[in-house]
Length: 98
Image (cartoon, rainbow, N blue to C red):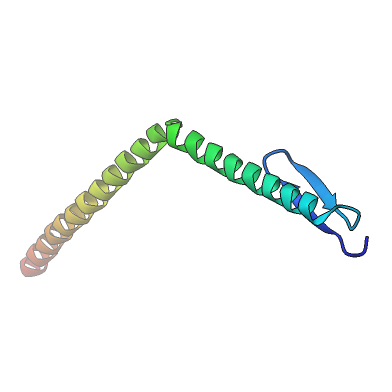
């Protein structure tokens, strides 16, 4: 179709083809209607996201797991240094005994 363009009907999922046979006022009204529906759909999606708390537990568990993992890493690093010091002490003692 020469001279036509497509508008997505936000939220509805329909595609409207606006051709040359429509008046300028009709095309403008259709574009405004599509824009209003798109804005309304985006606003509704944001409101649903703000009300939805289903992911909150997942985030809390992820934070707890991160703190436990970091604590384990620090603890293992400290334990590794202690073990290395004991091994060096034993090695030094055996070397002095020979």
